[in-house]
Image (cartoon, rainbow, N blue to C red):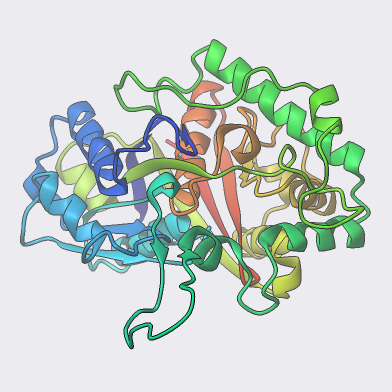
Length: 381
C-alpha cells in the first residue's frame, strides 16, 4: 500500500448566484483550475496525469461526462480516464477519497480530483417524452429537485436544519452569531490575502457580501418554517465555482523529485437519518478519529462545511471543537456553497491555511443530503 500526497490544491474564487460566472459553464471553471495547476507545477507534464475524478451534482444538459470534457479540453491525454461522482454536497470530497483509494492501492500514481458546479446555469427540466395533448406544462428546477430537496421527506434541506436546531437546542441568536463570525473571518482572510496560495490567477474575486452585520441578520425572517430559526442569512447560498487537487503516490513523488504540500492520512464515512442530515459530520469525524486513534484536539485546524449555522453549531458543540480552530477563514455561509465543488474546496482551504499558520494536522468534513457524511484528515509535509 502506497501513501497519498497532495502535490497542489487550487480553486476559483467563489461566484455569487447569477453573478460573475453567470455565462461561464462549470466545465470552463474546472478547466481554469487544471490550467492553474500546471501553471504552478511546470515540472509535471500533462501527459503524466492518469485520470481525473470530479464531483458534480447538476449535470443535466451539459453533455456527456463533464469530467471527460474537462480532461480533453485542458489538453490532458486522451488515454487518461475521467468520470464524475455525485454524492450531493459530498461529491468533491468523495472524488478526493476515491482518488486516494486508487493511489493507495497502487492502481494509479498521479491523478487529479476535485469538484465543479455552476448553479447559476443549472437547467430547468420537464418530461415531454410522451407529448402534451392538453393542459399546462410544469418546469422543474434542477437545483431544487436534484440538489436541495430531500427525496424522502420532500422537504427542502433547510427543514433538516430546523430539525437539528430543535433537537440540539440551537437558538436563532446562536445561529446568527455563527453566521456573522463566518462573514467576519472571510472578510479578514480576503483583506489580508490569506487565500492567495489557493486561488487561480484571475481577475475574479470571491463574490460575497461584505456589509453584513448582526442587526441585518437578526431582522431576516425564517425561510423554511413559520416560527423557525433558519434564515437566508444563517444558511449557505447558491454559488458557482471549482476546485482541483493534484494527488500523487509516494513512489511518484520520490522518483520525480516532487515536493508535496500535504499527505492524506485518513478518511471516513457516516450515515444516519435523512431528516437530520446536517449532523453527519459528528459521526464521520468520530469514525475518522477512531481510525487514526486520536481525539479532536489532535487536529490543529478543522473545516466543516457550513451548510447551515444550526448544523455547524451542533457539530462544533457535540465534538467539542475549539472555535479558534474551526473554519478560520470563514466557510460556506460567507463564501458560498457550489454544491459539487465544496468538498474539494474545503480540503484545498484546509491545507493552505495549515501551511500558512505553520501547523501540521487538519480535518475536513461534509454533511450530505439524504443523511450521509464524509471526513478527510491531512498532514502538512
